[in-house]
Length: 163
Image (cartoon, rainbow, N blue to C red; front, side, top):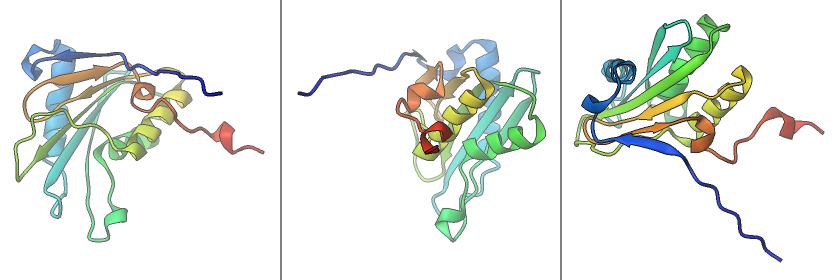
């Protein structure tokens, strides 16, 4: 017999970046700044991420493509890897992710890929606390989530690899 279950996602929205609280607004502007540093000659889809740490430091990351497509890296993982290497004792408070495609106007919030969602969920588990995620685009609505687990409810962890 099947049992029906439902998973809901709790998130907030604001109509535009200009309506964000100052600390959120600042982080989104930093993510937009990071997007301009992207190397995306193939997709022309520039993505930026800004990670705010509990010490107030903000770390930027942008996507980097490569002609060997699997060799690229997303903005979110680029920033999170830098945090891991350079700020191992700091906790992430929030991350803002935005996109600035060069060939069309994006008005829907960009969302992390599945790999980035898994990395963020694992990062939350390692630091033993969730972090806010702000998703935005060049214009339009901003989504604010309370946790990476909200983006990937069936995440995968090391404990599932043990025999």
